[in-house]
Every structure is written in structure tokens, then in C-alpha cells.
Amino acid sequence: MSEEPQHHIQCKTGDVGRYVLLPGDPARSKKIADHFDEAWKVTENREYVTYTGKVNDILVSVTSTGIGCPAATIAVEELSKIGADTFIRVGTTGGMDPSVSRDIIIATAAIRSDGASKEYVPTEYPAVADHNIVSALIEASKKMGIKPKIGVVWTHDSYYRGTSIKVCPDVTEIVKPWLTAGVMSVENEAAGIFIVSSVRRKRAGCILACAGNILSRKEEEFSEEVLDKLVDDEIRIAMEAVKILDTWEKEGRI
Image (cartoon, rainbow, N blue to C red):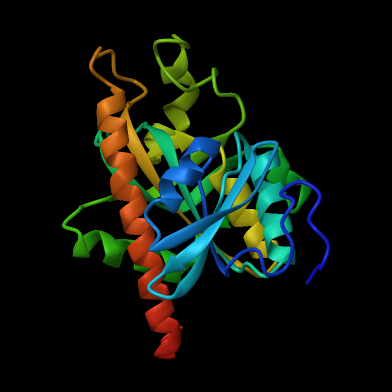
């Protein structure tokens, strides 16, 4: 472990817990930390805003990653060097499969259309979530009476290319291969987080708030009010999943 502050996140050993929640939006770090039993701000540098606190006496942290896999992989790399070993992306996404609209999505794997993960291993290597984290997120959702969509998501780099029919008229053709395969939604960070966690022998999961479907032409899709509610739900699910994982660890189940 490193005793010196990491170059980008500016955290050092002892600043974060083993469990770290990873939102993309820096403003969401504070929103997540507000759900802790107690929390304190550790650092803020570039897109990386970190809080640490306690949840049922479990030391938990949150670090924002900014947009895209290059920034997200930096966060996982540097957090891993100072003691973190369990990462849960808590983000947003746009629905792709016709069954997905205003839902919570738990990603089991991610299509690697990003560039950063290719710097680690060839694309034939799958970007998959840790099965224990997936199970904990599912169990936490059940406890809260929320029925999530569970499946593969598409991680890509170009937000305005293949993200919404409103800004990219040919999006239907772009995503057709993924629709055929039943891919749930599109987002920008999961594949990078999964791959770096695999390479560094850490574990990672991903839960996403989906406020609408990118292929929909309905004006009411993607309302901020709906998104805020879904983000609050996914934060509560992620927090409960951390408690479940901690319990399973203590019981020797994982």
C-alpha cells in the first residue's frame, strides 16, 4: 500500500475503506455520503471527490470518477493501491432493450466498446461483475421491494453517438447488434471498472438508474424528477448491498 497521496485522487492509505461506491458525477459523492451514518470529506481534485464514513460500523467510501473509462480506471487503480478492494459503480444509464425504461439495472457484464480497457487485456477477455456483488445487489433490491432489471450493459466512449434518438437520429442502426442480444442499456464506465478490478484481483459490481429508453421519442422520457428518485433508490440498494457483503464475509460465506 502507498503512504503517499495518489496522484489524481489525492488520497492515501487510511483515507478510504475497503468498500468504495463509484458515481460518475462529482456532485453525487456528497449525495451518497449523506446516506452514511456519519461521513467526512477526504479530498476533491479534478473529477475525483471522495468522502469516507461509517455504515453500521463498516468503513465505506465514495469517490466520483467523472465521465468515461479512462477516468474511472484511474480511480480504481489508485483506490486499489491504498486499501480498497470492493467497488460498486452507482451511476446512470439509458435504456436500450424495449423492456427497459424507468428502471434500476444491475449489470452482470459490460460490452467493451471503450478504449481504456483495451490497454489492459484484449477484447476477447470479458468484462464481468463479481458474482457476490451481483447477488448482494439483488438481495438488497428484494429487501427494499424493488425489482431491478438484470443483465448485460453496453459501455462506450462517445456520449453523443449512439446515446439518444433525439441527438443521434441513426442510433437505432448503431445499437441494432446489441438489441438483438438483449443488452439492457448504454453507459460509459462499467467495462473499465470491471476490467481493472479483474486485472488487479479486486471485485466490482454496478448498479444503474435508468430514467428512460434512448430509442423512445416520448417527451416525458428522462425527467429529472424520475431520475432523482431512481438515483436515491440505487444508492439505498448499494448501501444495503455493502451491509450484506460484510455480513457474508463475517459468516465465511464468501
